[in-house]
Length: 431
Image 1 (cartoon, rainbow, N blue to C red):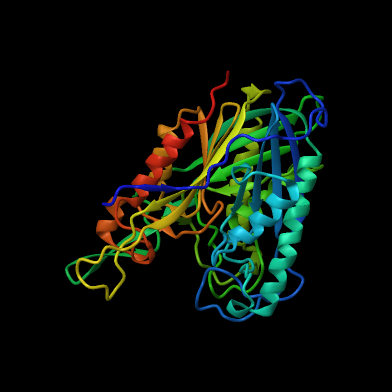
Image 2 (spheres, rainbow, N blue to C red):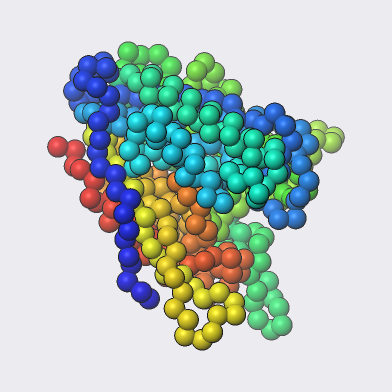
């Protein structure tokens, strides 16, 4: 394997707001939240399935973007969760750049993530590479995200942060083993015998002056693919429906941003369904699973007892070059070029955050959480980029869809996880 080559892309710790613009004590944690609708008004092509080429047909549930801005000691961090599949086709940079420039953020101060629903529009910033409606939607999306982050930063106020952990059976390993020609073949299905990290990580944020929580953000590892290529209705799918359940249950102005954990090999228990079945009292599976996940988030939030009202807030972003694999038809001995992957790390008090610009396997996300120096670390995939699947090395030997479609050489996923842990350890201490 070629040595890991690290390219530029640092963020340091930068000015938050001009002195005196934010009220609160020097060491207070300041938090602002915002939510904005990003549902398309015109039919668009939907993401995630090559066989689905027609335009969307109606909206089952709205799409939203949610932001949480943190500040402490003149340092800022903004987390954005979008009800989208991700940022394929180099869609991350135009969106990030618009936000960074308008809100005067440094590159590492923005973690722009997607929940990986396959029932949302495909962002397109090149007219020649997508439907005109998707191009128009992407311009609309960019404006909305800028407005969203503006509102979150404008609402900064002293707050406390508490964390909790639960578990959910919604996600299951999808690498099913079937017999074929005397051997074993890996297909996309359901493999409940495989170990899966089912942790539901919950972060509750409350204003110091009392009142209702500002936010319940949560991370859970699954694709949001309970809806398959036969579905043409717009939906947030599992993560999006969980967000909506939480916000509807608690009410008020609380937001519940979701983040897709390390789920490259994890699907919902019910997967690729043709739509929302409601006949004879049937509860649609996407709604059932979204509600189950949302209820666990609420249950965990009610038991949060550990609170942190101070910083530090610190973050950085790096682009790492990981070993690529030869393409079909390459001559023997070909040395393929490295594949860039965006890694973002941050801390808010004792909470760690890792953003991966790709689809990390569940085992590797668990390794990051175990190796992190922080008591709780959220692993956020589809964050600030979309480099493709990062399988675990064991899976590379078995083959299967994720391995075949990944541009990375075996072992690249482990290298990415190790680099993320190392970056977490460079963040400033509590002192």
